[in-house]
Every structure is written in C-alpha cells, then in structure tokens.
Amino acid sequence: MNINQDNLYLIGNDHDVCQDYSLSQNKDNINFVIVCDGCSSSKNTEVGSKILAEYAKTRIHMLLKSDIITDEYLYKFFGIDVIIHAEKITNTLQLNNSCLDSTLIVAIYIDGFIKIFVYGDGVILTKTKYGEIKFTEIKFESGAPFYLSYLLNKNRLELYKEQFKQPLKIITEKEEKVVNFDHPLTFNFPVDELESILISSDGILTFYDDQTKEKISNFEIFSEVLNFKNFNGQFLNRRIKRIMRDYKKLNIKHFDDLSLAAFSFKE
Image (cartoon, rainbow, N blue to C red; front, side, top):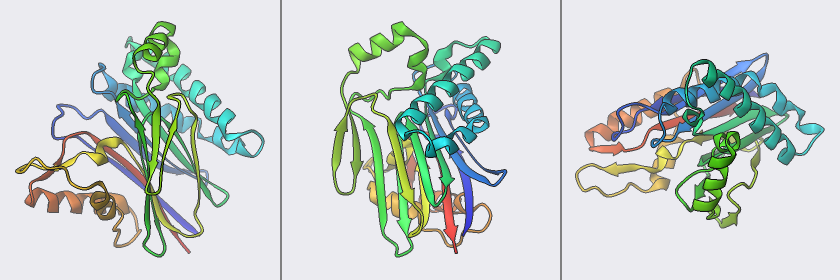
C-alpha cells in the first residue's frame, strides 16, 4: 500500500494571527500527522501550538509501543511526556505555560490502522473507497476544551474542574456518546477500505456565507474537503486551495483558524 500524507493551516477570518498549526511527515518509514489548535483567549498560543506539535513529533515513536500496553495508558503517558517537555521549552523562552493552551491531535499509521489520540476538541473524517463519508466530532459542552496544559498547574486544573465540569460529546453520523471531560480520546481506524482519513481543528465547523451570515452545512464542507482528484504530492493543499478560491467567489469564509492533516491510501 502506498501511503501519502499532507497538511496545512489557515488563519480565520476573525483572527489577527493564526493560532492553529499542523505538520505531516514520513520519518524512518513512520507515517504520521499532527494538528494543533491554540486557544484564542490565551496569550501566545500561536507559539505554544507550534511547540506542542514539534515536540510531539520527536516523541512519535512512543505510539509504536501500543502492542505492549493499552491505548488508554499510552494516551496518558504520551500526553504527559509531551506537555512536561513542552513546558521546559516555554520556560526557556520565558513564556507563561498558558501559551500551551492548545488542542493536540496526533495520528500515526501502525500495522494497517490509523491510531489517533485527541487532547482537546476537533474533527476526524474518513472516506471509504466506495465514497462513503463518516465523521467523528469531539465537542466539549462547556465550550472550553480540556487542554494538556491544565495538568501543569494544580490551581488551573481545579478551577477548570469547578467551572467547566460539563461532559464532552463524541458525535458521529450515527450517535452521540457522552463521557467525562477527561475521558481518554483514542481512536483506531482500519485502512483496508479507506481512501483517505483527515484530522482537523474545529475551524472546519465554522464556514459561513458572509452575505447572509448563515452557516454552511458541516457535511457539505466535509464532502468538499474529501473530494480529492488525486493523491500525488501535496494533495490536501491542492484541494483546500481550490476550495478557498471557489468559496471566495461565493463569499464563503471560515471565521476560526483552520488546521488540517490527512492520509491517503493507494494499492
């Protein structure tokens, strides 16, 4: 199987600086993609989101240990490792660790599966070889995602538990599952029947008509994003740039930052 990966990130219409970040890489024959979504109400998260992603990249090999320990344990171990070392970098830069208030989504190809760990909120999209599109949305009812950075400060963690104790929802096209805000968000997708799989910040849910101010259907956006013409080179960049050109003519915009990363699979 030929696996390709690609990524990009775009500033939102309502933002002065892009606080999202993404990357993709095939390193030592390890295929992975990463997406981060910095909190708009915290300072310097445009820096913190990059630190999280770039450090997570250096620790991606840890996810290959999933054959000897549970996903839940690996999820917690990986997350703690990334945030502790990311804080060391922010300390060196003399930044408050709240700059690490950011969603982190990591996806890696392992033995016929895409394993995804989500720390925060976001969206996962899949498209089968037969054209069927499925989605998974991770949505915090409080509107405040549970970031790894809260683990760095006991007072912030307790304040979060007090103010934002509402559960989170894992929403698919079939059902809504309600879990605790700190529930391990681990997903495994077999790639045998898949054409592509994509991870995204929640900016993908914020497209709207700038004239009527009406929201564009999420599924319409999902279908457009996954409508790849081919999977050569920067297949995701080509698709998104084409969508943005077409949407500009229609006065359609996304008000939040948008970060995306995707895998494609060809026999």
